[in-house]
Amino acid sequence: MNSSDDDPNAILGRPLELPCGVRLKNRLIKAAMSDSLGDGAGNPTEAQMRLYERWAEGGAALSIIGEVQGSPRYPEKPGNLVLGPGADMPALRALAKRGSAGGAQVWPQLGHAGALAHAPISEPRGPSPLDVGGLRCEGMSPEDIRALPDAFARSAGLAQEAGFGGVQLHAGHGFLFSQFLSPLFNRRTDAYGGPIERRFRIIGEVIEAVRQAVGPSFPVGIKINATDRLVGGLTEAEALEVVDLLDRTSIDLIDVSGGTYFPGAASSSDGASRSGPYFIDFARRARAVTSVPIMLTGGFGTREQAAAAVGDGAADAVGLARAMALDPSLASGWLSDGGGDPAFPVFGAPPPGGVTAWYSMRLTALGEDAETRFDMSPAEALDAYEARDAERCESWLERFGRG
Image (cartoon, rainbow, N blue to C red; front, side, top):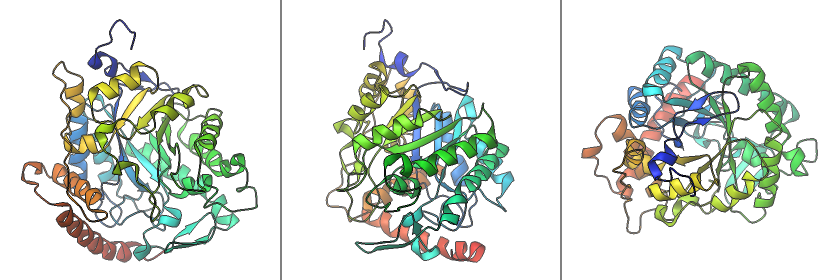
């Protein structure tokens, strides 16, 4: 950091202007997490509204609502919101308003789980048929693919109508658009498979349709993988080509992350948050091939790490997920002289999925203003999370049916 105002809170407190003209008030963003706080019928709950209100009150420039579906046919979980026909617009407007407190922005992350759609309430379908490690899905037809741009455009238009400040398209973590980019899971031989330019094609078409729906001054971001962390998956070299292709679109913010949720895949968040940003070297290389602002998500545990990434130009903004689950006012702390870093819990031999469930249930406690009473082990959190999912599956099927 060689700026004259190189103290961390000054660096992180600088506004960020997006290409569309919208200004984020600082460089600290609550990255998308699957909060699983919908009501099981695709609508926001009071706890969800309060959660995003707390992040806004806590100083975040932007909070991104993870896993918001345009269609109920391919959800990630039964706690997802659905921005589609019959959506509860008054509740969505309340969520948008409360998540925008104090000049903050709140954006839904528009997604489609594809092959990872929750099987109890869906019939998973991805770019190509799969039967890998217990994960099975059908392949999408050309008609299925051609329907995606209009579907995402409708959802983005509903988000704009509800008062959200922008949208993020989900093309990371092994969900549908990430599946299209991955040669391991996209084995198509038509115009949507083969070289990276063709595997990217549907993403470009969706971006164009969304932009036409929302106009030039509404932020449209995207989350991508720096790498799938799978043998035969998307490589960093191909991911840089994706960044170059995105540079030719109207995207306003590229959120760099990595890893997938496919069975057996290594999770980026399995690493220690205090070990440093996971994808910072990739972000530096991406910076050389695009003028679009880059948000870097994953592995930030200290203010010094965040300020260094922004100060040396590796990233324009820092995405924080688990850190802000531990302290919803972390942004305000990092933008003050006092600073203060979150104390990440250490769990001894948690069950598979237990740590993720622990953070998910902590989000519920934050939304209920009850985090001081939150005292679950990862095993207890996993049991509670799975029981809640089972209940919400029933509500989902009653409202939407299956697939």
